[in-house]
Image 1 (cartoon, protein in one colour):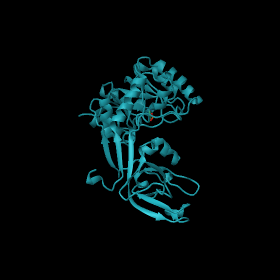
Image 2 (image 1 turned 60 degrees about the horizontal axis):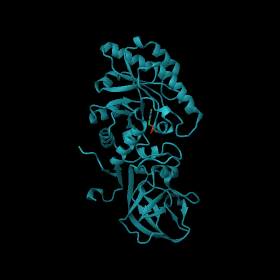
Image 3 (image 1 turned 45 degrees about the vertical axis):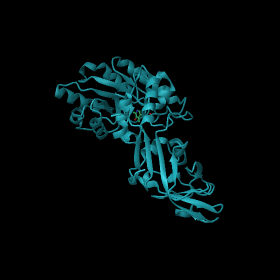
Image 4 (image 1 turned 45 degrees about the horizontal axis):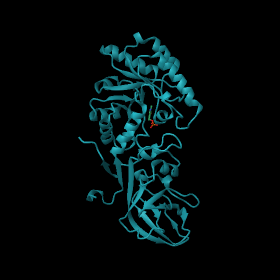
Length: 370
Ligand SMILES: *Cc1c(COP(=O)(O)O)cnc(C)c1O
């Protein structure tokens, strides 16, 4: 390991696994097309490395959340189709066009502004239409979309995609999912010449009925669980923190802020160099009666003890012989997945990934050939 990485927690990102996971999703949905969702810095993994790896794997359509993410991605992938899920903020249409970014229009004012821009430019710039089928977040009402379908000649631009987003596909058999499918199918039928897209990762895995022309998997490609109880694809991230001190703690002493956990026996405590400032959430910590996350030290699982502080956490290594300063504790990897870690923090794998902090030394392995 290079000097620069000594002392830092190390995040290893397996771009080969990322590419393999995307290809597995693409194979599963063929002949439907498979996009790549790279919003939020590619779910925290780093868009500058993830997006070219996904392009090399075969992805040609990419979704980001915000205009600035689209501009970053455009510089990385000059030929990709890039759609911006957050839609069009007032006045931004010329910037979207300049960078060949396609807004996902989610309200009638956005549609009107894009149409006016296209008419003024005398150019039919592609944009996507988002229909809200039950999430009440972004999107035209289904009725509003049907009205637009009847006014296609006067629209001023050609929609390149009609899409909606599933609210509950991670919970099998949730009644809202069937309702959303029915509502979306009706709207998609009214745009027979426009590509249709409904499925996130969970939608892809639920049934081919959700695939339509284009799917938009995110979390499954990043190695997370998409549907409760279904095994994830290959893990993409590994996180290790150095042990910077090993100390003895006597039975009945407490560990860390708030004295939240009392040692039940004479213990060996390893202090690791990672904390909530790194996105290793405070909620991963332990207290009396409420175990926290686990770390793997010298091949053995060990519980965290006490609270996670800003830069440090403590691990009980009493049962692991020979633990020494400079050893490394594995917090993600070797069987600890993002979903397991998320459970300890009462959150989801998405939040574990997107919280991964800038202080880690990041190593990208198995990158595609240039
Ligand atoms: C984030 C997002 C996705 C990807 O969802 P996953 O659950 O990560 O597969 C797809 N579509 C939209 C609109 C999204 O916001």
